[in-house]
Length: 153
Image 1 (tube, rainbow, N blue to C red):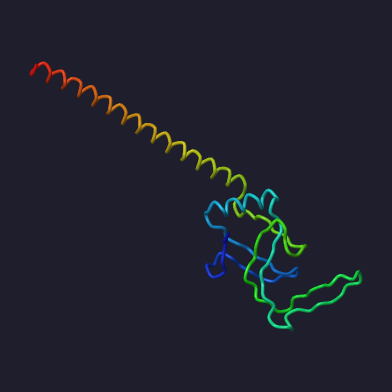
Image 2 (image 1 turned 60 degrees about the horizontal axis):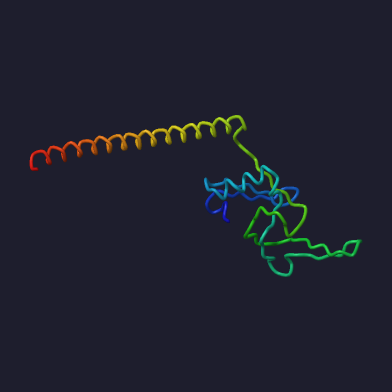
């Protein structure tokens, strides 16, 4: 699921001493909130990347002392950065950085909950007022029917 794009200004990419460093301003979506919660909980903590190697000079292969092959990427076109459970390459990391202090976030959450409670209270009051009006109307209808019956029967 898409969380950010460079073209939208919500994803920044840069190279640091370890490799690729990225930051994403998450949108107000349920998916983004779920990803953020899983990052904070440590359920998601690694990355995977989608890229094309730019020509034969874009990568170098070498054999390590233990016999395994080491691929060094020299020139690639990056098209995807993903936060994942099982990365294609080990040694990556992802973490949630909160730019809002936890106590401020807690206060904002409680305020949002209080607003939701107030909205539900107002909706319940409106429903009760509608029910009371319907009961008054029903009582008025009864009286009118009795008058009608008394006059014409």
